Image (cartoon, rainbow over the protein chains, first blue to last red):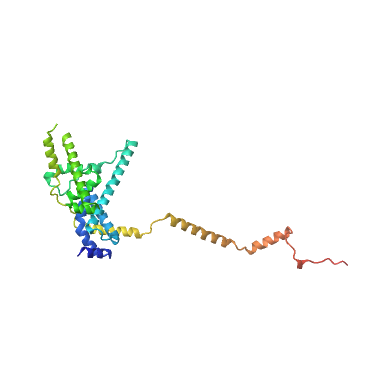
Length: 191
Length: 108
């Protein structure tokens, strides 16, 4: 089915069209969410949220962007929203712990490293170090680097997802690599 | 302190740790779970949610109905009650005589 026809059918509420869309994009969405959230349950939950959003908003979808770009955009936005929410919660938990020292703040969600299932066994240790360094990147650099490394999106595709120019994405990737090299250098130096 | 060159080598190796990574995949039941979740959400939306506004309006309407029936029931006087009032008015000479009841005195 052509994309424009698929969009038309989705807007008409065609169940089969929605099913074929989910089947086509579910792994890309799940993998993207997993890249940001680093937890399989959260990624599954978030992937479902993404498709629910698609289901509810496809009526308003104007074909300014490709369907895939729009879906990636929702996946990235929603994953980052959850991360920000968790960070706020964590700060609040620390504040509570400060005010009430008998209670320990819950830090398990961030301290546990989830090895991405696609990482080769021999790379697991290094991948963990790199993933932790990626988390420290500024948000825009992190989005660009994650989409490129985990989803193999080209800079052009990343530019469309991030609603940015190609040169802006190239610059983001360049800075991301520099920052990661510095972060890793500091890590190995202090190790 | 480690050799700078060795550290740079480590950094380069680590920078490529995600190369060749395979995409993580969901299982075959993802769509079924998604469908169930969508149905649940729409069922929840279909159920009327409790609203304080609606509750307040209902309470005002109920008060109005109760007040109406209360006063509508007590508005009519019973016959016994009317007789009692008339008797008391006569006893204390509270009745106002009508012009037609006036009997002029006749001087003989």
